[in-house]
Length: 337
Image 1 (cartoon, rainbow, N blue to C red):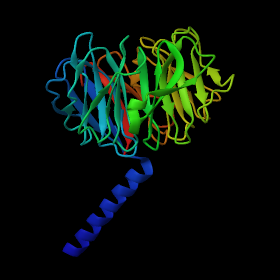
Image 2 (cartoon, rainbow, N blue to C red; image 1 turned 90 degrees about the horizontal axis):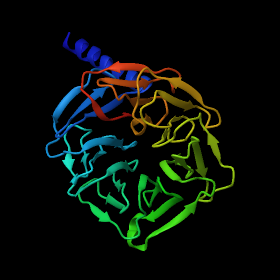
Image 3 (cartoon, rainbow, N blue to C red; image 1 turned 45 degrees about the vertical axis):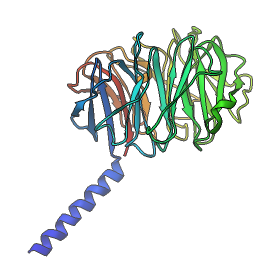
């Protein structure tokens, strides 16, 4: 009887693992607003579980990024007009957090390499700065020499060798050698972009996508082999594009675009950005909280209304509103596990 029970239990366990593999397990991280915020974890889109407060984190959590290939690593930044801890990182999937050992102001954007080893934060001010860890958050370095004013979103090349970032006021992608940051940057000029860029994504293929900042026409540019070809952009909808966000699957087939905060529109493409479908959500959203999972199956964005998060599990065909009681959330992301 005992052997039969053990065999049945093994079958249940194997069946459960097969179900998760077939349907895709997920982990969503939510960090609420305010000083000493708490992080919440939702596994497989179930009710989130609260974790201990992030003591000493006093800025407003803005951008949260999760390592695609190693989702126990993640980084979040805290924005404030006054000097506060620039951010925090987790090495255990958001259960606990370590504050980054720098204080600064006007921090807003960050990113993390696919394996979680490299974490990058930009200071969005006239005196720009880059904060970086190359050892899973264990130590951090601040770089200011040669950094442009108003640097925007950073991204890391798939081979972990290069850092790229945009700037509000420059039609340039700034490229840095992560192994020799002191050598300064080289620039990739996007001649038709004005006045500058904001969101940035790099595919496994090396193609780079950049969203235009505050030009009045929402446009998405792309670069292959680090050379911009005239006409390599697409217009997505109309209206203000201040703070436009872009997220996409690893291969770039599945994309999600949000042109600005405090509006309800998101755009989804499932053919590498050739055509886009508009979805109107039921409440205003935060543009830089959008995400697309590694495969593209899951997409989502947070609402500016407390306790509301929008998630799609069908490549953006439809979005479900999740009314999770976590308070006013400031940072939100999800990745497949």
